[in-house]
Image (cartoon, rainbow, N blue to C red; front, side, top):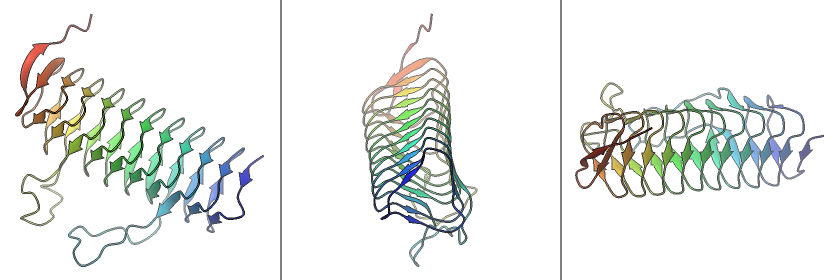
Length: 228
């Protein structure tokens, strides 16, 4: 049996599965589909529309679209999930995390406390992203990736000086089984090859080949990794 707090706000058009818990002061907007055995903790906001002021260069969505939260997920306290988002089964969204529109997150992932994921980003299955990391817009992250705390990613080599253009704004691509150490900074359009490790504090300015360890400022090749 589902348990929905009398203090939660559930808008019309929301679909709620079996054995769902929705705690105090959560807000669920139209178009949200919640799977079975999902827990939504206090103060979470799911399905909200992005809002832009005159300062915003990229035009935001203007109508509610589908948000789908898979079975057995936990949406923790004060997290914010915008409209047009897909979250796979068994995924944990940590306290205060923010996931913008047009994002897809796979199954059995951890999006930890105060992680920010910008628009139109895809994250594979069993990937873990740790506290206070920023995942930029127009970015791809594969399966079984580990991204440590306070990692930065960016998508604009012109650092905003030429305005917004979809064709020129692209974040890094992080392939399957990559590990990224605390405080690393990965610049736009970088490709990090499968099985590679980026050491803590590195600034990655060039593509990283598969199964390599890189470190430093700028990050440089250290050694090939023996995966046997």
